Length: 125
Image (cartoon, rainbow, N blue to C red; front, top):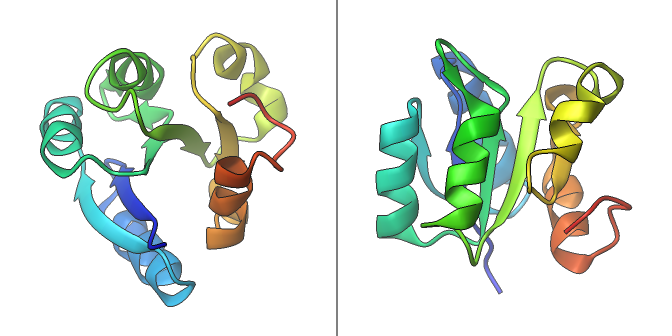
């Protein structure tokens, strides 16, 4: 089964790099978004299996966006927070986010995402 993924990040270089990496590793990137409004619209339209949300979306809160996605248009998707910050730095934010969990951008891979889908990540689902 192909895993459809939506990536939400305000850094265009990261979006391109993540898309290339994850597609090379076998995921299908259904879309990318760089703002909360665009992410909500694309989540409704594309109905992805996974939504990766950067904790810091410029002036917007990725944590708040993740909450909105989980409660609304991506309620059937696995929502995972991503960041350049370490998990230890934002543990409390992750715990309050209602998401499946967290992956550091330096550890982002199709296997890390599949672990959440398979329930093997050790994180909340």
